[in-house]
Amino acid sequence: MTSDTNTISLPAQTRRVPSGLTTLLWYSAGHFAVDLYSSALGVFQPLLASQRGITLTQAGILGGMMVFAGSVMQPAYGYLSDRIHSRMFSVLAPAMAGIFISALGLAPDFGWLLLLVFLGASGVASFHPQASVRAAADLTGSRGKAMAFFISAGQLGFAVGPAFFSILLGKIGLERGWWAAIPGILVTLGLLAVLPETPVAEAVRRTMNLAALKRIWRPLSVLYMLVFLRSVIQISLTQFLPLYLSRERGHSLAMASFALSLYSTMGALGGFLGGHLADRVGGRKVILASMIGSVPFFLLFFLTSGALAFVALGLAGLILLATNPVNIVMAQELAPGQSGTVSALMMGFAWGMAGLIFIPLAGALADTYSLHAVLLSYVVFPVLGFLLALRLPK
Image (cartoon, rainbow, N blue to C red; front, side, top):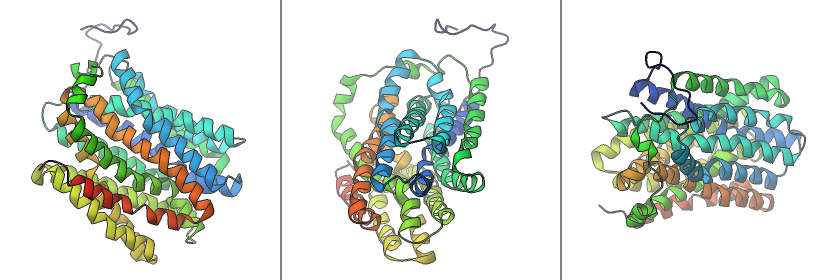
């Protein structure tokens, strides 16, 4: 066995190579951890607004920084990890995300808030491209199901994050929120102990091949735009739902955070079901049904109140986010030799560009109008996604 020059070679009898299932489970745990922290900003924002006086525009800028550093930059980290071949891109990420995001309550001013969000989100970005390839690289069968499991683990972390931070910050306060970094640190220690330094598969060594991507740019562009349109409403709700429900609809922060957890949990379930359903009826049908089927439930959430609104929100998340693994698997099938690159495009870059544009826009418009009016207007994007999905080949 060969290793990089920076790798310390261990005697063969002491080197332990984990099984494919073990690797999948640990990378899924890492995905859960990094996305736990990537969803925390929505809980911090109402507290920062009430205790530190940040405006809705500043809240939108923080959200934009989160998606730029945590999502838009993912292809760059994917390219670097393919070239350098170091596990550190993924195994250090949970601790990095946990430490800097959990320290937001210690920031003395808005500049420090921006810096901490940037550093924490950089940990999120470095994890996804490498882990999305390595998680199932040693599994010879059922890689589609393995990818659905890996993605659903991240979505579940995204769902648990708001409730976790809401409960923790409610008990110990904003300034002591740094205790929330412990899960991320523990997961990083586990990844360091279990996963090997050398790449787990030859596919991880492949670098970006622009010529291969140019040959399939048309269907890949359609898939990219579908993720982009879906992400506009998905990421806007993730960033602003607790703030919207607490400020404009009179709910407590705990209830508002529960609503976000409900939405994300149902989305995780939707992604798991969508991946299996695509194997039966095809990804195109799942995408079409997901886009148009979510619209009535989003409208019901914004135009009603009480339990009915929360039920509608959960069903909207279940249906809209059913395409999470479907888009990624379809893109990887289009470019099997560039799975890391296209995964970064679908998981991070499309999501990030949607957030980079529409989260600051939502914050700025909400200062003039209201979050209710802005978020309600974003329901048009799944409709546009449905129309675009009609262009996917049958």
